[in-house]
Amino acid sequence: MPSNDDVHDDWKNLATSTVSDALDRLGIASQCVGIEPLDTTFRLCGRAFTMRALPASAAGGSLGDYIDDVPPGRVIAIDNAGRMDTTVWGDIMTRAAVKTGIAGTVLDGVSRNVDRSLDMGYPVFSRGRSMRTGKNRVARDGLNVAISIGGARVNDGDVLLGDCDGVVVVPAARESEILEEARRLDEREANIRRALESGMRLDAARRKWRFD
Amino acid sequence: MPSNDDVHDDWKNLATSTVSDALDRLGIASQCVGIEPLDTTFRLCGRAFTMRALPASAAGGSLGDYIDDVPPGRVIAIDNAGRMDTTVWGDIMTRAAVKTGIAGTVLDGVSRNVDRSLDMGYPVFSRGRSMRTGKNRVARDGLNVAISIGGARVNDGDVLLGDCDGVVVVPAARESEILEEARRLDEREANIRRALESGMRLDAARRKWRFD
Amino acid sequence: MPSNDDVHDDWKNLATSTVSDALDRLGIASQCVGIEPLDTTFRLCGRAFTMRALPASAAGGSLGDYIDDVPPGRVIAIDNAGRMDTTVWGDIMTRAAVKTGIAGTVLDGVSRNVDRSLDMGYPVFSRGRSMRTGKNRVARDGLNVAISIGGARVNDGDVLLGDCDGVVVVPAARESEILEEARRLDEREANIRRALESGMRLDAARRKWRFD
Image 1 (cartoon, rainbow over the protein chains, first blue to last red):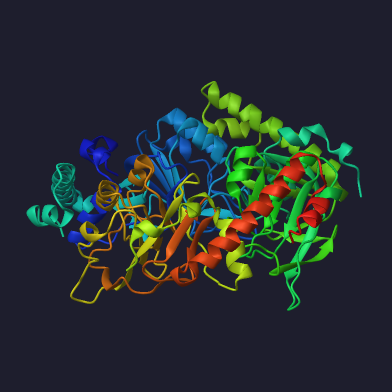
Image 2: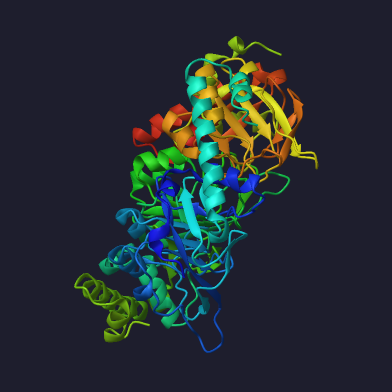
C-alpha cells in the first residue's frame, strides 16, 4: 500500500472537471457517475482505503471495526453496489474519522446522520441519505481490494478527488502523466478565462489557446 | 383517533436513525425510503393525519378542502403513489397549516412553492418538487385511512418522526416498547461518543458498550 | 426570431405554479418535468435560444462556438435528451454568458463547475451535475430549432420561466392569452392569501373567490 505522503500537493488545487479532461485525453474512463457531495463546498483529496460490501447472509453481519486502522489522510471508499435503502456510514464513523484525520468518505451507496457530516465539515460523497443501518443488512466482502464507485474502478491507494461536481479516480499506476496533462489543461483554461476577462470573444480565445 | 396530546416529549429528541435501530430490533419495517426534507435542518414530530390520492377520473377531481379540520399538532401525510409530475401540496396549504399549528407534511409525491415552506420554516418531507397542480390530476380516495409512504405503512394516528435523514413511522400499537428501546439505544450511543471523545478506540468503545 | 425586447415585464413577477395553472386552463401541456434550479433562490425569465445535441459520431464533435452570437437577455436551452453522464455547460460558458448578459441556461441534461454558477448567481436549471465534458461525446444537431426540455416542447423564441419549482414554457404563439389568464389567477390567489391572513377558513375563502 503506498504511503499517503506521496499525494502531490497539486491535486488539491485541480478541479475534478480539469482532471476529467486529462483522463479523457489519456483514454482513461475513471469519472464516477451519480456520486455527489452532501454539500457543494466540500472538497476531497487523498488515497483510497477501499472496502467492498455485499448483502448480509441469513446469519447477519456488518462492515466490522476497521476505522481505527485507517491511516490519517486516507479517503475511505465503500462499494455498496449503489444500494439506496441501507446506510454504510453515520455519526459515530464521522466522529472517529475526524478524530483520526481521515480525509473523507466516498460511497457507492448512502449515509445517515448527514447533519453530523455537515456540522463537522467532514466531506462525504454518495448517492444520498437514509436512516436504516447496514447492520445485518450488509457484510464486509473485502478490504483494500479493487471496487466500483459510480461505474469507475478504484484500486486501494488510487488518488480520489472530489468537489462540487462529484468524484474522479486517479489510478496510481498512471498518476504522473495524468497530473502533467491536468496541469497543462489547467493553465490553458486560465489563459482563456483571462482572455475572456480582457474582452476577447470566446471563439477567438479558444482558437488562440487551441482549446477544443 | 388518538388525541395529539399523548405524543411523548421524548420523541422530539430522538434521531430517526436511533428510532430506526429500535424498529430493527423489534422486527418492525417502518422506515420510509426515498422521502427527504426540503431542508436539512427540518425536524418533524406528530401524529399522522392520513390521506390517500388516486389519479383523477375523466370527470376531474381534487383533494378537497380538508385542512380546516386537521387538529393542531398533527402531521399531514398524503400517499400519492410516488408521482413526480403532479403536486399535492403548495403555498396556500403551507400558509393555512402554519396558521392552524399543523406540525408538518409528509408526501409520497412532490410539492410546489417550495420557497414558501423554506421561508416559513414549515417542514415538508417529499420526493421533490414540481409546479403542476394536482387539480383534475388527482382525487381523494380516502381520509384517515392506512397509506403507504416510501414503502412504509402509516395508520392514521401513528407517530411520524422526520429529520435530516428522512422519515420513520412509529406504529401507535407498539409505541411504548419502541420508545423504550430507542431510549436505551440513544443512551448507549451517547456513551460511545463520550468514550471516543476521551480517546478510546472505536472497537474498544463498542465492545465496552456492547454496541454491535 | 422575435426580439427580446418584447418579453412582457409581468412574466418576471409570476410564479411558475401560477403560469402552470394558466397553461392547464388553456389546455397547454408545457410544464418541464424533472428540471430543477441549482439553487432554490434562482429565477429565470427570457426568450429561448435553442440547441439540440446528439451523441457524437465516431469522428468526435462538440456543441461548437455559439455563445458569442447569442443576444443579451436570451435563455440558452439545450436538449441533451436527459443524459446524466455528459455535461453540456460549465465554467467558461457561465463566464461568457454573464459577460454577454444572457439571462440563464436550461438543460435537459447536466452541467459542470456548478460552483461557478452559484458564485456568480447565474441561473442554471438542469437534471443535476457531473464533471465529464461533452467534447467528443455530444455534437450539435440543430440551432434555433424546436427541442424537448423535461417533456415540454420549446420553440426558439418561446418564453422560459424558472423558479424554485422548476421551469415552464410559454409558447410565443399563445403568449398574450396565457399572460392574461395567469394575471387573473395571480390576483385570485392574492385574494385568498389575504382572506386567510384575516382569519377566514380556507374552504370559505376558496368558495368566495371561486378558486377550485
